[in-house]
Length: 197
Picture 1 (cartoon, helix red, strand yellow):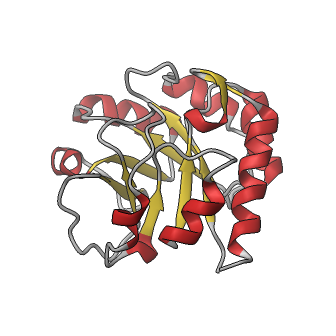
Picture 2: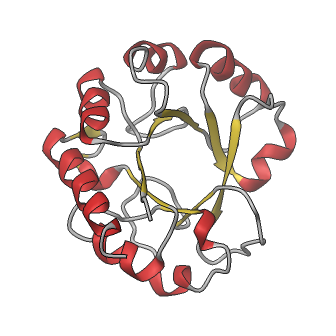
């Protein structure tokens, strides 16, 4: 089994490059109030040279269709990640994958497509209950998020057996500031953990 790894909340080109070099499969850019918020133009400029096989993910929270269209036009993401209910009010072309976010404590429908499972609030480093995540029927489509870091990601993968893992604050030296070595260590730990499944 190959673990899919997403590094989220990227704001600087050097950290984008570090994630690519480490072997990340997807890069997340936050277009919502956060220490990691970037403009669509900046996200486009710092990710322009990444290989085409690495997904560029627009991460939004309760966006208006107008703000989403701005991101779509200027950033041209491969994926939109937002709370499940947000998709109902957005015009999303078929060329863009949709990753609904389902949160711990809420109802998880039996979705057949990729989705993100995390805590009640994004980007705060709160570790979710891996035991409850492990019994969700469709965890082979789950990207596990919430409180992951280089030191615990292998344990989370062993317990939950998700499709992928997603990290943001867990690879930062201070909120909003990524650490190149932590990015490398996280990807290495996740990819090493997949070999033991």
